[in-house]
Image (cartoon, rainbow, N blue to C red):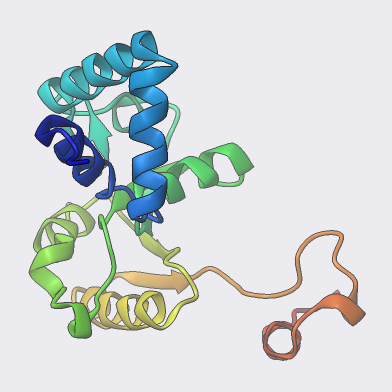
Length: 198
């Protein structure tokens, strides 16, 4: 039996989501059409609305509905500290941790030459303008500790230092509540290297 073209299109559209293969996309499509048509309409409406309204904040480059997001407009934030993260999700995690009261810049990715992602693709020109605005005293690099995240942190750090800015990198180490016997050797070694006075 041939699948209706509109169903096939829905399955293909769902495959654009990370971690969703052909079988998962097919299950989702069948679920939405067979068991939750109201949910499907809500999903379609919410996606359409988001595509219409969401844009990038002119200051931090994260997602916003306004030209400048509420976080960047807040007078309670320390404008002398700028934290660079890879994604809006990373910004959200920093905010949930309540450990940083400065402002952010979201790269929307990391450098990955093998994937064809270069400095222009992660808005480095925008970051340089933002960091060199005269208010920023320190840039904290909070990219992921992946090969791409480390390469991005190194590249961005070197670039910002040439502008006379103080650049720091978040530390790596043991998770809170972690036990040494359950930690991988790379994390343990990094924790020893980045030790500080007690």
